[in-house]
Length: 101
Image (cartoon, rainbow, N blue to C red; front, side):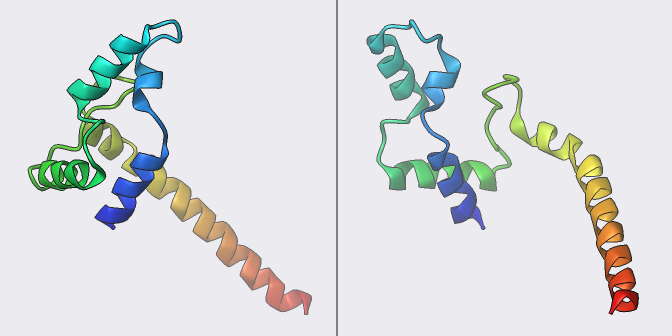
């Protein structure tokens, strides 16, 4: 699962493009990539990510500039609510399907 999450984060694209304005010079973009460790090889970034996750560090949100773990945890109640509603609708639809045949 951790490998899947790591690979999905790599597929998102260049986070530097999200963090800097479009008119930012390339040398500033390159400095930010270097400071964030984005120029490191994939296996180095993976090891750093796993080590951070083991220590409970899930990084920071690029959009809200706050730690990512509390943001994700704060959304769990709504996610569970939506899951329960979807399951209820699916079960209700399945029960009516038996009568339609």
